[in-house]
Amino acid sequence: MPKKIRICKDNNWHMKSGENFIWKNDTNKTCNITKDNEHSDKWPFNSPSYTVPAGQEGPGQAKNPLPDDTYWYDVDCCGKETMPKNVLVP
Image (cartoon, rainbow, N blue to C red):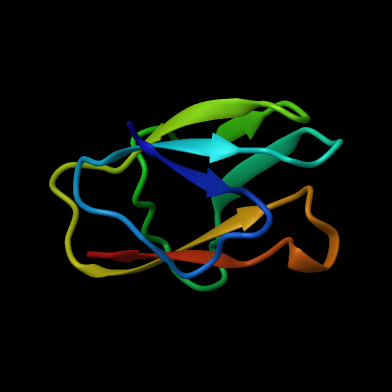
């Protein structure tokens, strides 16, 4: 079963090249996940962005191949916890 990534709470999490995971939105707002151009122009996910409705989950997948690095992304629905977030490979 793919791991669940809490959109607002999880930061500095790990994934592997090609890994499937689940975005978990436990807020009462729709969340948009996009590239953080301020920190990096690299994007580690297969989809160019993600939208996850309030209180729902949605699929995610890492690119394959994906070089080892820290990848930054923004989330627009989390208040003080909004952005930027990062994921570490591996």
